Image 1: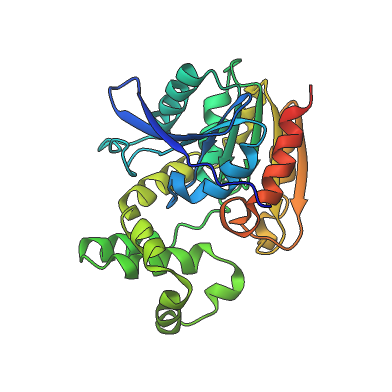
Image 2: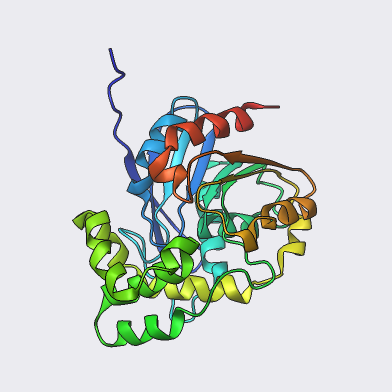
Length: 280
């Protein structure tokens, strides 16, 4: 008989600048904080949190600009997210952090010189090395946002940031195809965060090639990725990142992509994360 599904409990904390930061909690055991990436919300990690919650108390952050959390500032920088993460840490006592994509970059930045972080499990963290993260989508994206055409802006983003096969599809065809692969609820989540997505990617690009300063991290780090949508130009980036972090290990999941942790195989990723966090 299947185990009954346990609902996540909503809570919040006030960050250093007075901004309310919401989060969802599930499970019992040592405290873990999950930091979602760009264009993601806390409830999107429900399956991952449910699986990890079998052995840990999982707190999934609702980052600024999403849900019940307060907005990003007009002069947003990643330091805001780092302060928010530290506020949730202070309230929950969590020494274990999971980060996905841009949330992985937040976790890395927050862990620099922060001895209260004992372990980091990062799934394809959004680290730019040697200009590998594309920026060509930004002018058209901003133009479409200004014209009140959010879906067109999103198409520009996905075509430039996606796998090589996606970039070869003509724009008009890709725009027609996109609604077939997105539920209405997913489209609403994405289009409500497009301004935040632009600010966050500007920060990601600003931090290009600053990865050597992750030598300041004292936490043990698990770097995870999927092999399905790798770019040849970024294939070695995780290895390069691992070389500067004092205590780091790598794991690649075959057959899953950038969304393995929240959509494709969250239970599988949670199993590895649980094993990593359980080691002394």
